Image (cartoon, rainbow, N blue to C red):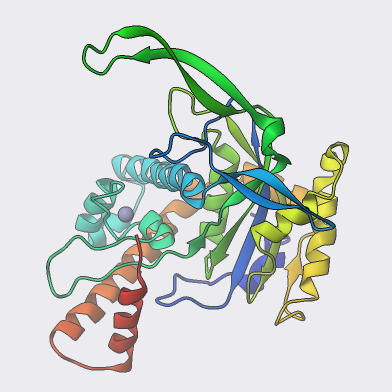
Length: 354
Ligand SMILES: [Zn+2]
């Protein structure tokens, strides 16, 4: 990416290297997740589409049933894609001898190549560093990696009654696995339903940001079942950097719900206006960068054309270095050394989540 790249505008909100602890630097990516096929977004237990009652929009309080797309349903495919993409590049690099990592980090490379969701996480690879990883080791020096990517539930712009369809299919009899006479009914979301969604990246490097945007642009499959997974496309509508999260997905949903559906072609312009409004409520309002719709378009174009193989080695290098450092800290702690750093590491461990 050239020196004058648009990504430099977000420079104040990137870390130069992977950090041991989170910093306030936050980049929010606003998008519409738009269904392009019949989709099933539901939890396995209830086998029903998840709905929630919300105000119709920011200016209209009347209760409206909207479809919920849970954070976990957005995160799972992105987590998988991000991991597989980087692993593919690492594999290529190693097999064609195009990396210097092998001399110092041979065993780390092996672990990173066999890193698997979700019970065999290596804690050394860029996926583990961004999406987090819980240690499966029994050793006292075990430590976890806290995730630095935040997802929240996204709600449909359109009311539930306008977007759901009942589809029937032949029921399978449990005992014989044969197709029975009875028809089962499943609820699906129709195509072209919009879920305004926000993902917040915390203390990320420029390279993590690029790899994550590539993931968003590449991914097309979300939803409950592979059989009827439904294509879903991510349309990035805004990017804002700051020392905090500027806007929540619910606020973004209610603001966009005031739009007429014909205005959705202007969604990036509208999003920019919304972000300008929410900037006024921020704690560090003098420290916020909002990309204009033109800048956003240009940045996405740059990232599309960016050759990710140029940064993969550096991403793994940083991840391996940080892992080595954390491991050292954890073993110091085991030996009973009590420095300030090891205490903080303990705190981080307790906070860690799946
Ligand atoms: Zn890993």
